[in-house]
Amino acid sequence: MIQGTFTVSNSTEPILLNGHWTTSQGTTFFQAVNPATEELLAGKFPVSPWEEIDTAIHAAAKVSRQMRGWPGSRFADFLECYAKEIEARAELLIEAAHAETGLPVSPRLKDAELPRTTNQLRQAAKAARTDAWRNPVIDTAAGIRAMLGPIGPVVVFGPNNFPFAFNGIVGGDFAAAIAAGNPVIAKGHPCHPETTRIFGDAALTAIRETGMPEALVQLIYRTSHADGAKLVSDPRIGASGYTGARHTGLKLKAAADAAGKPMYLELSSINPVFILNGALQERAAALADEFSGSCLMGTGQFCTNPGLVIVPTGETGAAFVAAVAERFAKAPIGTMLAEGVRSSFSTGIRTLIDAGASLVTGGQAGGGKGICFQNTLLTVSAKQFLTNPGVFQTEAFGNGSLFVLAESVAQMAEIAESLEGNLTGAIYTATTGSDDADYATIEKPLRVKVGRLLNDKMPTGVAVSPAMNHGGPFPATGHPGFTAVGIPASIVRFGMLMSYDAVRPQRLPHLLQDKNPGGVWRKIDGEWSQKDV
Image (tube, rainbow, N blue to C red; front, side, top):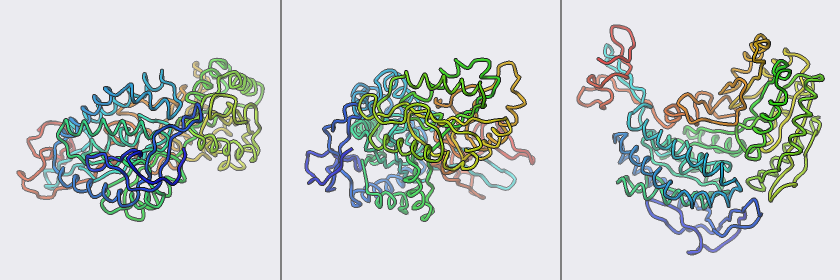
């Protein structure tokens, strides 16, 4: 992206404030870059000054007060209508996202990510309509009842690698915040602003079609770092969601924490994969194919990319490394999302090499179309890894991975114990059960280091399922008890616990009244039950 001084006029793209596309008063702008051609794209998008951000917060706070006590069906109607409006703009969205990110039209954008995005909006609508996320509890003996309710205006920061499914104005955090009954201030990512603008148009249409307050969804494209910190810590904000780089997320969280404001972060993860000896002896070639496909998919630009692989040393492990290296060398070199991604990836690879990792293949910029970097494979001994596990867990976000050669299962378990928090962790074993005892040795330390544990499966896919945990211990996320994907659990982040003590029956929310049907937790004769009463 390019940013420079520019006198704001009608030639800059407007921001969405309080139901209206409004010319920004900012004096600087940025332009997205087509990463496949490295050419500037036409649209000029403003960097909003604090005055505009303050206007958005004021409007969101007013709407939040207006919507108190509204039924979930109101928000469900909006989410469902929004999904339809997105589908009506599918061609425009796919064209814009392809130009801004270099991601392939098919199967990535058209066949996978856009349907996933509308699906999660509809899942969030269902949860809002049924109040499935509110977790109502009734203690009749004590006369106390509780449930979750809206927390207030939510700020959502989207990442660069998912222009649809995690976009600040349509992605998982957005859907969860709206389903909980909160207005959203979306902060677009500068890698795909035109895509985000089209979503904004769809959202505004859906707002008007369903009679929702116009400030339910607002959009700003970019802020200064100082104003971003000021935004998440503003007293009128209820909570914030962020997906992106660790250093930026932690700065924002520090500001939010200082103001007592919840901020849910998805930061970084190298997603360790342990491949045991029995699995390699049984199906090494198939595993080399599976791993290479997973690691190089999307040029490795997934938060669940397998960036650390632990394999046995010796002939079996060496042969597997060689097989993966051959596949990396032959595979096409993908286009990266932006120059910043390539620069960060290059820095991460250099950090690993400087620490003692050996380069097997790749290691240089170029070789493909546009902004790119060679498919890169590194190795290090387990002994070296354990002397400095922190540096060898440096995230290189892109089409590369570090293989750790372990001398024993005990050493693998020691590596698992040394890991930082991750979104995922996988263990591959023989189908015969010959590795089961070794699996148990590694699983115990690995289980507490990852949000999602996989068996004989690469971590790259993240299903939109109620059972999904797209979270994990720090630094994978800012809190190990919450998920960014999976409804209704992801909605809970944007709710506050509301307790009612001795409140008269007619004054209680419908969900906490005695005649409400089953599914509500009630304490009857000293026992908790969800049965109908």
